[in-house]
Amino acid sequence: MSVIPLVNSSVSPLLQVRDLKMHFPVKEGVFMRTGKYNKAVDGVSFDIMPGETLGLVGESGCGKSTLGRCIARLYQPTSGEVIFNGTDITRLGRKPLMPFRRDIQMIFQDPMESLNSRHTVGEILEEPFIVQKIGDKAFRRQRVKELLEVVGLPARSVTRYPFEFSGGQRQRIGIARSIALNPKLIICDEPVSALDVSIQSQILNLLIDLQKEFNLSYLFIAHDLAVVKHISDRIAIMYLGKIVESGVGESIYRTARHPYTQSLISAIPVPDPHHKSQRQILVGDVPSPINPPSGCGFHTRCPKVMDVCRSTAPALSPDHQPVSCHLFNT
Image 1 (cartoon, rainbow, N blue to C red):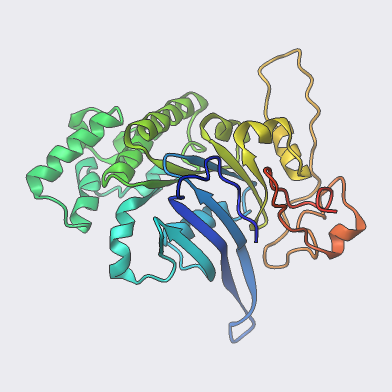
Image 2 (tube, rainbow, N blue to C red):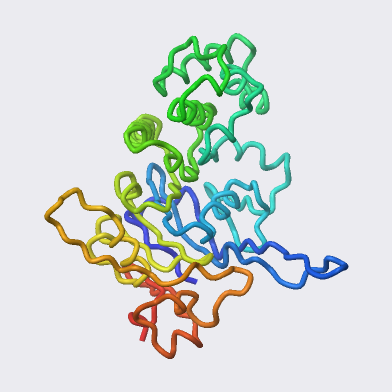
């Protein structure tokens, strides 16, 4: 098991994920017996430092969102460890987990789906304080006004409902809810993918400003490497439930090693009409995590596949830019 190397190893990590797995049982037959498992997350390890952003990138269906939900304990992982601030929270029950829920929050992809349409914005933003039994009514109302101001929304928004806002404004409400309890880690699950490009930059800049102001750590999940480049200190590339390459942001873009990473980077549009990029288009779709390929999970789509790839799974190399590929591990 290899762990993504840290930029500053002299500071203790805020979050340590060790060999995390999330296998969903697949019911089959007349009696609905478990015959197979959907290996959505299959042995992932990494660290996140205080005040750092780790970008997690991959195609749809690779297990990114499932990983984020396991860390937030919205799912109970099959195995592995999630160590937050020195405490393993993987098996904690509901009551012991409550204090950690204050420190680990999520921003979801679809702001309309993640906000209760029957509640006003004021009620939505008050709810975290009520659940955690923090402050009286006057305190909560004052705190709600402060949160709206921080994310750039007027105080009169408290009496309005989510459907009265635009997509970007609704995401600001979601962000306000995520920072309400002064968390240490926020899992951003594709927070800008449902927004217009012009609004995406505003939300990304807001997240960066909040990180500086409140010393937040982010796990930033996305399928767009261009977006991740703008906000991440380090980047991890995920494919079929595993991390296949990782490293410092700029080094990933300059010297991508894994063929999958190279393909993702080649798809980033360049704002220069005279620049001719050479796309590395992958053939086929992501294999099913229920029946993953033998050996390297990427070998069915890899343009550089070798015989060993079909039979033996590569390990994540322990060097400064880890890569799970036989081209670099032989």
